[in-house]
Structure formats: C-alpha cells, structure tokens
Amino acid sequence: MTVLAIDAGTTGVTALIVTEEGTLAGRGYQEFRQYFPRPGWVEHLPEGIWQATLAACAQALEAAGSPPVACVGLTNQRETAVIWDRTTLAAPRRAIVWQDRRTAAICDRLRESGAEPRVALLTGLRIDPYFTATKLTWLAENEPDTWAGVEDGTLAVGTVDSYLIARLTGGRRHVTDASNASRTLLFDISSGQWSAELCSLFGVPPHALPEVVPSTALVGHTDPAAFLGLAVPIAGIAGDQQAALFGQACFTPGAVKCTYGTGSFVLVNTGSQVVRSDAGLLSTVAWLSASGELTYALEGSVFVTGAAIQWLRDGLGLLDNAAQSEALARSVPDAGGVVFVPALTGLGAPDWDPLARGAIFGLTRGTTRAHLIRAALEAIAFEVRDVIDVMAAEAGARAADAGLALRVDGGASANDLLMQLQADQIQRPVERPVVAETTALGAAFLAGLATGVWSSPAELEAIWKVDRRFEPGARDEAAHAAWRSAISQTKGWAH
Image 1 (spheres, helix red, strand yellow):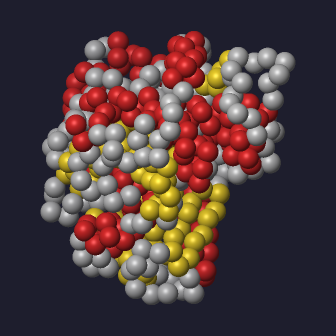
Image 2 (tube, one colour; image 1 turned 135 degrees about the vertical axis):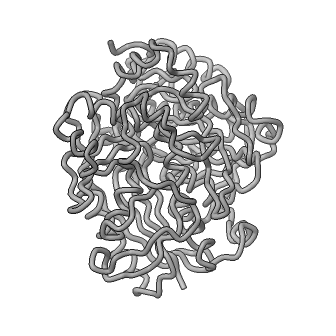
C-alpha cells in the first residue's frame, strides 16, 4: 500500500506517492497564479489551488502506475485566510496569503490598545500581519457584504487545509488540525481549543471556524465524485513547517530542522513544554496526537529566502533558473563586500518589522551579478544563523548543543554551497536527507501512522536516511557583522 501526500505550498501544489519503505513512487507538481493587487498585498484564487491539487495528484498517481492508496495526508501553506460557500464550495473572493502586509495598521492599533501581551500568552505568537486573524478583521472592516455571509453561517472561514479538505470531502467536513489552528491568533495553545476571548478581540464568529482535529487520525474520506474517483481516508494534517519537522523525524525535544522554501523556517521540538521566547521566536503547536497529546515547537520564521533567488531570476533577470545560483556564486571567492537584505515583505524572526524593506549595500564598479547572487546565498545563511543563535539561548541545552545537526529540506537545500555556508555560520553539522521533500513526507508519515501503514515513530526514524552531511568550517564573523549593520538600516523604511 502507498500513501498519497498533498503539499499545498505558496506557489504550487506537490503530490507524492510514498511507499511503505519511505521511498517515492510518483510525483506531481502544478503551479498556480499569484496575485499582487497592490504593493504589499498577496492573494491566491482558492479554485486555482484546488485545480492545482487535482492536477498534481493525477500526475503523481499516473507516474506511480495508480497503486492502491491506503490514505491521504495533507500539508499546506499556513496562515492564509480562505472563505468559501458551505454549500457550493465556491469562494466569494481571493484568499489573503500569509505574505500579505495589508493589516499592518490593524496590528498597530491592537498593539497600541495593549492587547499583545495577552495575545502572546494565549497563542505563543505576536500580533503581526503574517497571521490569519487580522486578515479576517480586515475583511470584516472592508468587505461587509462578504463578511455578512460569515456572520450568518453561509460562508465558512479557514486556512488552506480546511478549504482543501472541504473540497476533498465534497463539503462534508469543515476541520483543521491543531498545528494550523495554532497559527491563526485565535487558538489557545495551552488548552488546545479556539479561544472565545481571541475571537471577540479580532471580531471573528466562532461558528465560522473549523473543528480542531488531531494531526494524525482519521478525519474524513475523500469523495470519489470530487476527487479523481478515490474514496480513501484522510488521516494526516499539519501546517507545512510542522509537517517538515515530523518528516525529518525530529520526534525528540531538541531536534531541529530548517526548511528552505519561499521563506525559511527553523523549528525545534520542545516536547510537551511551551517554551516562551523573549527574542522574537514563536511558540507553536507541532502536532496533536490521536490521544489528545500536544507536542510543541519553538519557531523562527524568515519570510524571504528562496523568494529572493526567485526575485533575482524574475525581477532582475540575473538568472535563467534558480539552479544556476550555485555555479555563479562559486565563480567568486566572496560577495565582494556586497550585503543583500532580502526584506521584500518585511522582516520576520528575530527582528520582526513589517515596515522593513529589501536593500543591497556595498555596490562598487567591480560588483558583478555573481557577487549579488553570492550575497543572496550568504543572506539566507545569516538569516538562519540569527534564528538559531536565539533558539539555542531559549530552547534549552539540547538545542544549544553544537553537535546536534540541523536537518534541512526544501528547494534551496539542494544548493551545496548554501548548505556549507550554513554549517559554517551556525557552527554545527547540516544534514540533508535522501528525500528532500520532507514537508510532504511528514504529511504521509502522519497519515500512515493513523492507518497502520507504519507502526510507530521509531519505525519512521529508521526510514529517514542522510544524503549528505556538511561539517562546519571557519565562520566569517566580519561578514555577519556587516549583515547585522545592514539589517538595522532597512528597518522602518516603509511608512
């Protein structure tokens, strides 16, 4: 038997057919359109995400020879706000994406009212446009006709996982798992429930929200009329970064991973303990077991990493494809004094400034595109180092252990130069697994555990295999100091 894993990311949907041995029997991928209606605004068409899901799953099944599928696991871009009709499943407006910054003024207003300490205590998060709740507040204030449908129960509210499960089940299920719920600013991570207090603060009617279910448990069945003729259990759900933590077999407290995607996300497993951060990291739910046991993580969210390479390719035309970046960066010994701060949608952890903007410092007549590209790769390594430095200080001795490897995944983890720069900057080994698409793999693991494809986390740990281990070399402290100086100069740029 195999597991169908759906990874509904920010720019496209990946589908994998995962065997009992943890290998990939088939893969599908379909991009969907990005909408940028105003500066700082980012939207997706929900129907576009659904059609990409159907296309990617059909490709994966065909590539694998349409094997028997035991279950479906789902992982997704988090924090994105989706609204859809409970009956027709049509969306009355585009989804507001996690990268969207339109709610900065709402966040300022809430902080000025003194709400943030209480919000942080309940959610483990901070008040920031990144999260779902302020997007819903914005809709209530700016699109009253749409919001009336939310209030009267005609329209459902959720994140991308909720929307896709509604589509997969033909509208029979309106659910989310605890990891996704914990990213909305509406969820009490200690009690594991929606918070009436937070719903009142953000003006979100609780009846519109999905039921919170375990991350690994049978939560519904696909409707064959809606989903490629398949009637199989949906048994695993997790937000993409939590799914990657699970897919990297980071099951014990102190285990840490970084996913290099559109942004970079560093998570350390903190077990049954909610670790609070004083330095810009987020406390979040990692997963909820079928027995109701919550596992937590401490997270550092860097908004733009892979997207910076994409911008150099598409915005500036410096690359034909992202894979070129390594060879070009290797063609120069260093960045030639160039420092690139890719704050294209503000700064995430540990600096947290939605008004920061991207900048390039240190340009001279001798600067080439190779220097710019190397500076971009160095920026990614610096961003992740900044998060791990804070994490080691706050998450306890095991996370601070320099011998404990950083497990890496995502598209940019294939860049050997970047991975070596990363090992050098964090002064600990970096391990890249054989299956680099660990976000989808984590969704498969969660679903397979719930349906008996795998018997235990120990069995999954044995399946996980290292492709390459990068040992740390000398650390360029001067370059990192220049990076921190550049960061300080990009803050508060937009007003």
